[in-house]
Image (cartoon, rainbow, N blue to C red; front, side):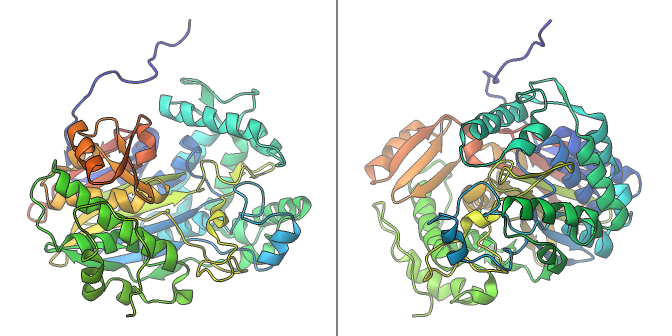
Length: 536
């Protein structure tokens, strides 16, 4: 008998925020959230829970992230916020000339060319080393068990798995054999309710756990990655893997109506969200469902994005500093460009982003905002034989224009879309938040922050509110739940409004806030995914 399930929920359901005292884990997949909670109950802290959840997500949501991806984190502990940049660099020997010799004028999305050094395993190990209470072996155990024993496929996961399978079937000129062997062993994508497992994935996680990720960068796993790259004519070498380092960075912020909103500095695109908020704080925003509110949000976002696309790369190679890009004077000059009609944005001169997100919190006051990704769904389509490792395609964002700040070069970190967010007030943690989804991410951050601070929405409502996203020029896509009359009024202001029926193109978010007076946690999870909050 076939399992009974619907392809979508035909009813609009208003969920409330979830409250807890001892601990909370919010992410897009229930099994991963519960794994994080399991670690909290075993004596781990929010950092341990974040690692456990992230590792589980590589197993139970491989359509969005994997061991071969990158990660970033904001960690609040002992009254201080720490930033972790777990992104990898391009292979040392890659270059524009070398890519052109292979017949490409732009970076392709699939194959070995867009593969950069994966940062995820070392990010887990470094978080565990510096702030964890349990060993990496303990925190990765739930993920290892799910990989070895299997888990049932959920509806949204099945839909994206099938979409990836169909896409890889149609792509020509790339070798996806190892991907099909690993993720479609029955000659198709797994269906809803079916059990999927990967012994290779389990063994790889065990090797990472037992060596604190050393196997991935220096040992047997590194050898397998390097061998696969060499056999396929890729640029990635074992030396590239050996040289990889996770970097602790100072988070950047803007003060928005008395709250400090924090992001990871470039090479991430979090600065775009901060730039937009810097522009928007010059206005009084009181009505959420107002054409004027949406118009100003969209115009500020366009201006911030144009600056980001022009100026963001690895921070040391940027032409303008973060301080210049986030200055009050520059924000005022950009704000002055916003009028009553939609504009075609251009970058300014301040001198004259597939992904999973999770949030965790514990009773001790530790809180983590964590994000990891393979970028385009499963990533490059490259899977290392016998390991279950799907390699990211983060290098796809490099430019082949030698005059562009984010130009392709060997040993360089590219413009990065994935960004974790965090809010504090008067040096006290309010909590982690994030909205994953490529270039939707800073747009989602701005909308969630304003929903919370300007319009007083509780965490779940702040996430459930209909979203919009700017794509290019004057084109704006809005969710099908977006107020129709406001969409019409925005069109009259010159915005090219399009209603989008696919909700997942608007990102997936999680929020955990802590009440500074009582310590009570409140959380919201993404209704556009298999979102779940595990609490204690």
